Image 1 (tube, rainbow, N blue to C red):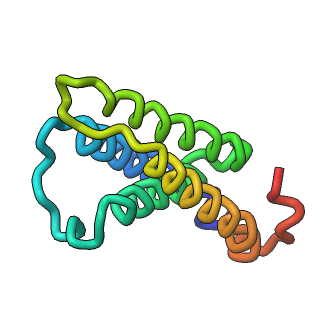
Image 2: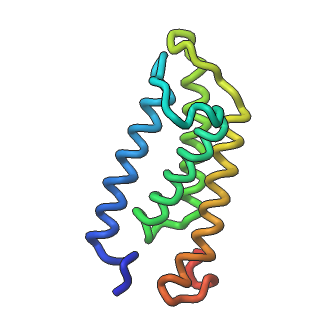
Length: 130
């Protein structure tokens, strides 16, 4: 049994995934989010970092789920966040470029996981693409 199929590892990844998901949602929807050290890199960097982490944890948390389905759902979440940010009471800006940055980060991480994780598990990448 590899580390990636160990139920304890998968469970720990799921806990980390949902913590990261809640953190991302709260930070995205707070009317005045706190300043973080990564703010100096810009808004797009924050989107790329957040959704890269979610995509990586998503792949590790749900090994039986098709990776591209995870990508689809996370991209939809990014779009939903942008729609919610258009609510006037939140005083946030809805920007389609944020959603594009989210989706590009997700696709890159999912693509890399399709190449890297099977090698770490000792399997060929073509077998894990589904």
